[in-house]
Length: 267
Image (cartoon, rainbow, N blue to C red; front, side):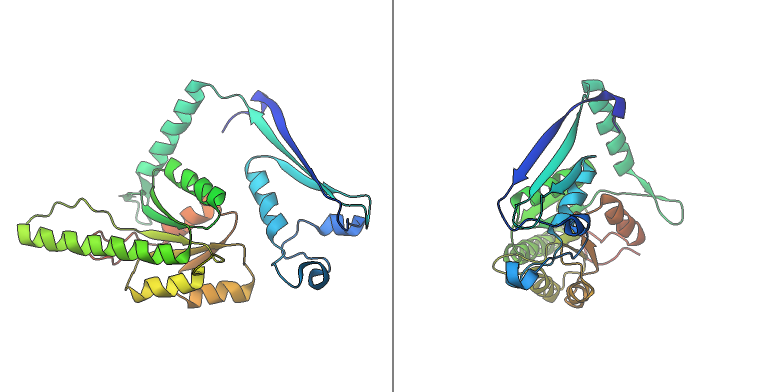
């Protein structure tokens, strides 16, 4: 990590509206999970009350701060975000990349053996900025990523990848060779709310293809009934947005990778 004393300024963002405003008590609760004020009146009953909590998590991942200001009901609200800027030399960047590569080349399993950590991951997210950010984080750790912007595209991608795996297996048997070039998708990171086909429906469709890899829901809908619905649809785990890479690594550490040839857990 970059030393805090090398901070070289900040990016300050202020966004103001002329809406209903907020009371002092509402300002204290504003960034909590599931918090909504007069939801039926102001939002027609929509939303989950998680947007600002997620925004706060993203800002804090960048060592920044976010807060809201309001003079009271009827006076609008101003949101203030401050993101620190740090000086980073080419040497620092090279060392960081080297450390990341070393961490992802090998890891410790429960019996102390070294196991490969690189995976092929399908990232399913309709918001382009969120999709790109997650892919960037995963690729920095050495993983290979594919992208889909909705559930329907995700199902088609999995089906195409599974067809390619079966085709290669058939060709290898015909040629009596053990050389493998196609790497199947090991993990699917699936958003919940998306156009054309939502996350749970996509998970069910993917499982009907007999896909046995890991599917993890990544969503802002972290209410217990939503998490259970995702898992009942076939997801192995559900993680809240913004996704924690530590939580993702912990899940992978507890579960095996999948075989290139059989799409089944390694024994």
